[in-house]
Length: 126
Image (tube, rainbow, N blue to C red; front, top):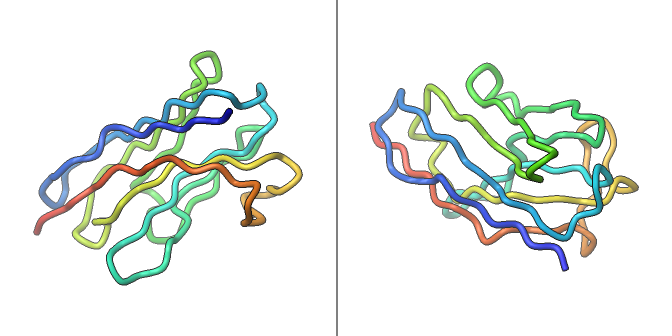
């Protein structure tokens, strides 16, 4: 059974930093893409940063140069380092994983085969 547990969210002022952590269990070793998505109130869920099975990252234009996705394969843990945070980064952040057949070049096929965490709230005040 796949389980994704996020932590590290919180409230910060604009310009501040946070590091999100996603502890994954039940995933087959190195056979899933992983990533971070977010959803703000009244808005659709959007992709923030993803990592292919080979470790290649992909970022949304809105976070390029500010956010960094990384993974500790030994601990099966995914991270999102968020710097220079802006009020528009305020959202619920979700860790996700998807089997390798459904991800390539940073693009994911969304569906029932995706796995999701419960989310961690990030609030950035101006």
